[in-house]
Image 1 (spheres, rainbow, N blue to C red):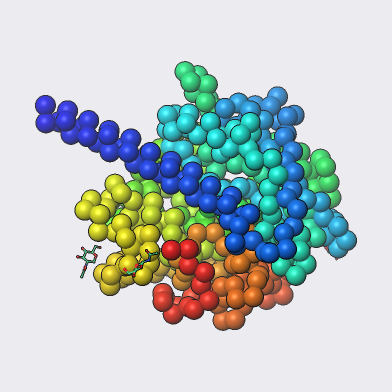
Image 2 (image 1 turned 135 degrees about the vertical axis):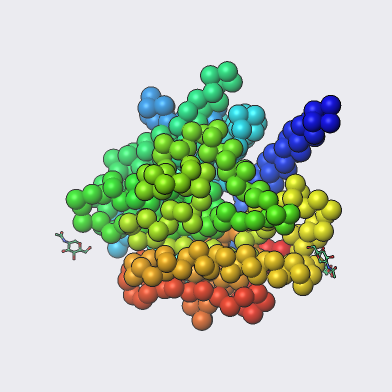
Length: 411
Ligand SMILES: *[C@@H]1O[C@H](CO)[C@@H](O)[C@H](O)[C@H]1NC(C)=O
Ligand SMILES: *[C@@H]1O[C@H](CO)[C@@H](O)[C@H](O)[C@H]1NC(C)=O
Ligand SMILES: *[C@@H]1O[C@H](CO)[C@@H](O)[C@H](O)[C@H]1NC(C)=O
């Protein structure tokens, strides 16, 4: 009896956790869309970029959660950038069960039937030479995220018809872009933010393999994708349990790097800390050491914050007490330790700043605007550009919070 009640309450807790994560993800994504058209965008707006539905991908089984075709937005390059390509994998959380993926397919993160038509490009995607001097005239592509598994799943739930085809979407999108000009690129950059940042890491070497034997400079940038396998405020591992659900539901294991799955379980190999050391393609990691998504969903999610002691702090950094800041600092230290070996490679780049934010490469205000975040006077756009074009080595790691007064904290 006691066991049954325990199980039922565990199930209920699990359901609530899923619900909270779903709401939080939807909210974060919605906020992202709002900010794309709101205050964080430059006053003189660029026109939004139209959507292209990739209908031809359907015959390869490359479909969104609901079976609809995948989609992308492309702003063509010009001048010195006409043969250079940015491929950006859109972010927006994950779904971790057939049930939550079933809910997700009713929205734009699970179906192209529900996607906003045009999309505003900002930051590294901007077409303005002032706002984005190194990449403004490249071909810039946003591949829409509608699989819920960081573009890495492979499977189908026959009972509900929910499709897990992230890896096929990735493959079909890249092959299509190659066919419309990217095959002759002299430069290519795979990027992504959040779940898209993780996807950029997972697919980085696969991306460069598409250019094998060609004279193309291929690199990757992962923004806010450094999700750590961290201990939460109640001593558990909330994100690990969540990722376990994502990996199992989507059938991700077969698409994870064998250099990792050969000696670790699949869930571990979904965590960047266990794969970044084996990525052969030059890659840049951009992340806030006080990543607000990780604070809310990995370190102090409601399921781990039993008495609500973290509720104020995770919504408002000035409400954090000393012991909470100490906990967050140890998370920052863990992130810095995670990139230590990675940082030793000459071809890699790093920008880890001590800000409370999640995602900094796709917004005007944090990418290259006056007063945007900097380490040692160098901003994010300049740091990524210097690294990509080999103008300088960039291994920027900030002092701990609150020493940096250039942050754009989002809480
Ligand atoms: C490869 O590209 C670089 C510049 O992108 C150029 O200088 C070089 O000549 C090219 N090499 C070949 C073999 O085409
Ligand atoms: C600070 O927050 C922690 C929760 O992390 C709580 O247990 C502790 O009582 C708080 N300390 C003070 C002085 O409020
Ligand atoms: C954040 O917390 C501080 C300190 O507890 C408080 O003074 C402030 O009003 C809070 N800000 C918001 C927006 O809730």
